Image 1 (tube, rainbow, N blue to C red):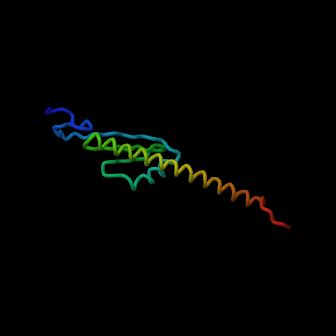
Image 2 (cartoon, one colour):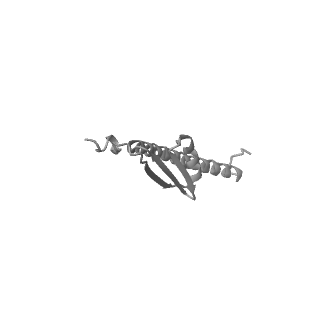
Image 3 (cartoon, rainbow, N blue to C red):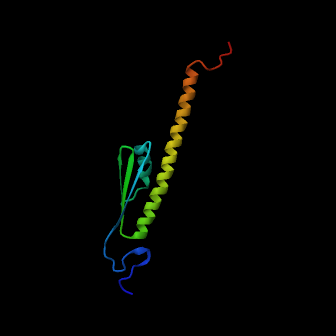
Length: 110
């Protein structure tokens, strides 16, 4: 059975080859989303921001590890993107409330 793929698709011979995946996504505030992801990055990940796009290259020695790292990255990416969008909506609502207060829309009871 020598030479057959090991579990997860890795070579049973230990050929030393690495597995690579690139995840590219776009966001309204890519720099902020990428900054939120930074604490969870490992040495096997390289992330860069280009305009509204985040590109993360993951390189791992085993297919199973690559899959796991990419899966974790995508989950973290979705959470970070949702948080940024909700924060923007909240700030916009607060800004709208402040503007209506400064435009004389408050009751002064005079």
